[in-house]
Image (cartoon, rainbow, N blue to C red; front, side, top):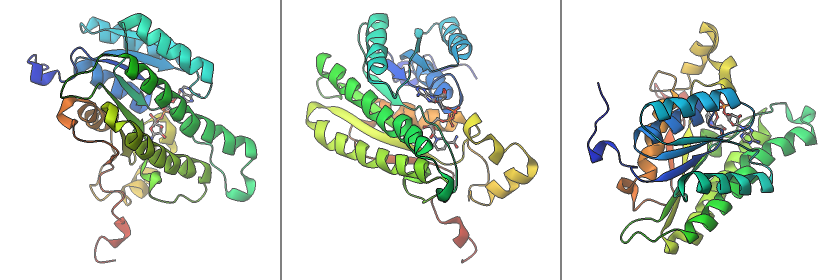
Length: 272
Ligand code: NAD
């Protein structure tokens, strides 16, 4: 079916977005979704230059606006440069999707300080740096009577809620994202800046490939998902697009779970 060309089909027309970690997986799907919804999209990548440039070319070929920007979200100066780059390309910024994230798994006795810090630096500090810069930039932007002047979606995880043995750095980072998101939402709501999170369950991307790329692994994974299928980046992209749009104008400080019911204690299906 062709894209709906009506304004209702392009709820982000005229909005300017930065998506971090957008050269693969969920970030890539989100950048495509925002572009389809009419937003100009800055595609941040850390190392996937070719994929980021291919995505930019795809968005432009579809009549959209996009730019690829290299930068490490855990580095303060690089985050500032990312926002400058977005403003130079589009004249400002209205939307942020703080999506970049990594995993470095190990049982706690074998988890090095380096791997603890690496995950916290990207997943939590990286999101803080991006949110702070976005809020500063939104404050410089025009007010929009009756609507949010800027909106942020932080990419969380079901592990902001579900403890995860063998992944203490990752689960701690996502628990931190939840409280950071809510505290920021509370702090900037009066300025008509909305801050929310999306918490994906199991989405088919490179980060968790070993959990779905064999039949046996997939079968084991599906036992954790009441809805009975793995998620796709597009499932997350639709939720992010809606949360960033004016349709969600009264929503701030909320986590939207996109998880096929993974957070519903699936062990209790069938009466426990
Ligand atoms: P992915 O590995 O494809 O994407 C992560 C992206 O982050 C990559 O593009 C990577 O280059 C980028 N990145 C890593 N370190 C960076 C840095 N220092 N600076 C800038 N970018 C950096 O995996 P994904 O599944 O698409 O993950 C995206 C987000 O979704 C992550 O925050 C992840 O925790 C979250 N998430 C994923 C799942 C899932 O099932 N796939 C579930 C819950 C949450």
